[in-house]
Length: 371
Ligand SMILES: [Zn+2]
Ligand SMILES: [Zn+2]
Image (cartoon, helix red, strand yellow):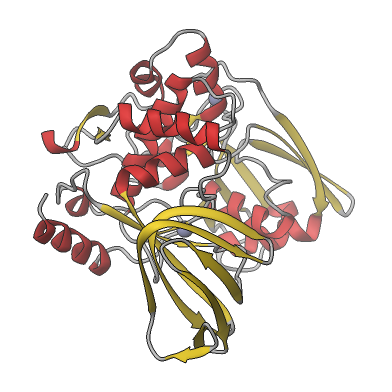
């Protein structure tokens, strides 16, 4: 794609989707045929919310957010600070990261809003490194790279400031991190360059992944709603069960259900509708008759109790006294590529293509330019 084509694509992405907690990608976006030279802009340091950063790279400078004013090397600046593409070392309180990107910085309420713009393949390599364990076999890294590339191209713009954030909400991006692992991730990205998963209508699959399905992946429509944009399907998996249990206050369950249902609810009135994999696909409030998607309930529980405690949507619930016991399997939403399973299959000799065919039976890998 030439520069004008990229500009049209970016403009379309900016005008498009808006932020969305669940994957939503109008097919017309994916059909704009992004090419491998597409750039990806990411809001970085989303969790750190830095007020002061030291940047080293093509230039060396200190940047401070003073209210809504950006102060660069002690001088207030009236516009957004844009820094050329290069290898940047970004340091601040709790921050020590390296990015190969161009950067833009602005100040908002005493916080630095930092957006890094990456070449697509640089982004894919960095996400692949961030999202996998150091000992992940190479074919599993290749499967992860194809999945991450597909996801970011299909997802459109999910944030006001940028297409993606650097947290699990989008795809984790920790900067360059451990050098040897990054080198393998780069090789995985390079050896799959420009390859994405396509749906049967030619759109790029909004291909999700998760840490561990716990023995069975989830049906995408049950988790994210229709129409399916992922190309995934519920399949049995050989990964370990990864059981978890959490005891939470009954009032917390009631509050999470109220969040999901959009009205008051009591834990005792809830009916959990689970699919054959054990995933909660729907909750019903027997008092009001209202229902909500299981994914919304899972997210509300995680937001209130902590994601480290509510690890997956595959769980059962038992009420006792003021408490609720949740017992589940897996880690993550369970849809699409299971990272634990992909590593296991790759160790058994499966190729990335075979791994992807297992988790995404309704999608086919192909070059971006082919479509
Ligand atoms: Zn995000
Ligand atoms: Zn699995």
